Length: 233
Length: 173
Image (cartoon, each protein chain N blue to C red):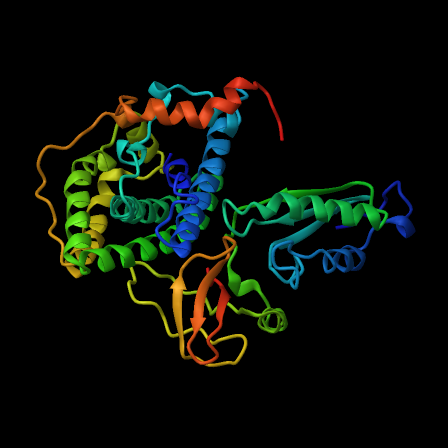
């Protein structure tokens, strides 16, 4: 999801290096999704491959956190979201790299290395924007304030996940909260930004209930696949 | 391994030496100075009579060159007379630039790409970059990072303040 969102920056980055960086991160994220969905399709055993899972599921069948489907906003918004997400993903991949599912553990070990670059890159930008001009500081703070309500559902555990945790296949998202907060608080402080208070948190994405933005995004992401069923290139 | 008592005559069976000679000539399409063996993505070669399976691990999850590399490997083995050639992908252990040998790093530098430093675990978040990357053109360490990401998934961008040239670094991962 976030890989697709980031790809929308292609040709629109504020500077050439950032255009390249955002689309490189997009490429990593799409690559990781490709591997995870391929593994999921095999486990499901109904003959659905990664393309079927990515391009033929409806919005209600998507279980992503809502944060990643939100429109990109300005560059500051994209960067703050990237940092909040990548810091989470880094800890999640690290924990999953000791999953009892050897395939998932292997995918996670690889994705962990990639996510460290995403965290470092986005964190550097959060500091640069937050500790920059009044304009960039204000925009970064606005982004942080707006996105904060979407961070709560990253740490919710449902029954399916709980069962996988018991089997040592998955990681309990709640256990990622403390290390994630530590990293976020550290970078936010360096950026001279203010951590928003933990007020109302949006939830629903993990249960298939999304923002109005997902349907529009899927329409664009899936149109070729749906218009030309079974097409190969 | 070549098993004894095989139906095919041993003289016609592909050998490890032959397969590696072929693989040493298959270059990374995006960094054509390195072979797939030097890049460290060839993890093993399996033999079953006349059939050869090259075991590879991807560099980056989304690296678009992997499909080309797999096709290039199969095509090169076909050209060498190995009809039953295939590629199998494994994810464990995850690829690291530490597998790129010294001689290959020298080739990278000669090609104008800074070689990867020894990879180190970097959790929790490290905001400050490690020491400057030496310029592959003039050797100066008076360089500044421009971006953690470059023209391909495996490279970062830097600028040399001594010879005033932008250059790429093969990222340490």
